[in-house]
Length: 502
Image 1 (tube, helix red, strand yellow):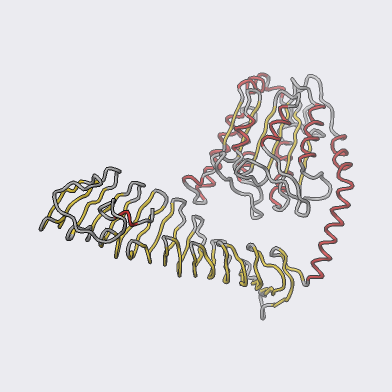
Image 2 (cartoon, rainbow, N blue to C red; image 1 turned 135 degrees about the horizontal axis):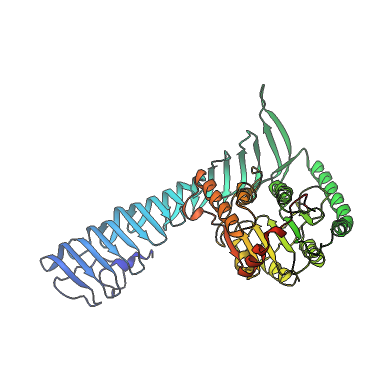
């Protein structure tokens, strides 16, 4: 795209030297000229059309493309501006399918100007080889700002700001805090240290503001951005956490079995609902909060007493961990109790999701394998429970709708397979989709899965609009409502059990 030697009028020549061309002659490479001539040379307004699709229209001088013009390349890129000897010189623009450049060109190279990328990132400043190089400002689609020195397309030194109030000044590597720097958080705390992969690491200082008096400056030791008074204090804390985790692991099996053994059996002639709620990522408290809230909300419309299991990472030690093993064992235990033809298995997953659909399982100090769509499909398909309702609140959770949809199953997801969802940070009480689904949308009635989902979807769209989320940023929740499930579910609405009903 940037080999501007291709702009020489005679493609058969081996260099970029200016060449005088006779007028009214078809070029040896098949190019056709149409326009003004002077002294048997292309001169004035004219156009050149090449057989391979290239097209130039504009000014010529003494047989050369010199002056204001527009050149369309065979790669779909368009150059427009002031040409000298076939290449841009001076003010111009260079527009391609994936980016649009404009600014000051020298011998076909953009030296200073701006670029807008297809992914809504933009840059303004100095360039080399059409890459940010020198002083400039990079703004991301989410309004993050990187300003300073760039080298070969990447930030190496300068400042960073975002809309949340974070401000960093120092060294970078590939747009990541790397090297000596100073980070100011929204709460006013200032961290001065050496940064690695975006986090303060090793010796440094933390400065905390006070309502009155001078700020408090504390020397300390940082590990992945967390402050400790000293390296010794960090090691002691690490040992304490490891000891606590070891103790928990020895009791985890009995903790899970205690929950599963306390489940109530199925009641013949009654449509019982058995619920499994899983909070996967323990590094964000929002997921643990959601597990408790979802169980409470569903307990207001179904009789779930001794018929539900909660698995949580990062919560209290009272509940079992959310692991691949505990999820599978819980599904088996619930399946063994319910009547396959009479009862409902209801499952709610909430966590961070990856683009391939994996749900993150993380208990901070314990490394866990993630829960994949293939896991869920295999385990759920292997159960005897005919009627299953699965709800997944996570980014890219539409992958679960694609993987689990069957005529006897309902699947809701908080986002399309290629979209993120919202409300998964610690600043949220619960994820937006769950807030909508188990909040106002429950008034639509769980008797009608489609109406319930549609009400939640409408609420999510409104929440996103209020926050300025538009276009391709919309989460686009997805659903699959199996026809046989719906016929079974609505065949006898009176069979739905609510709390307090015998």
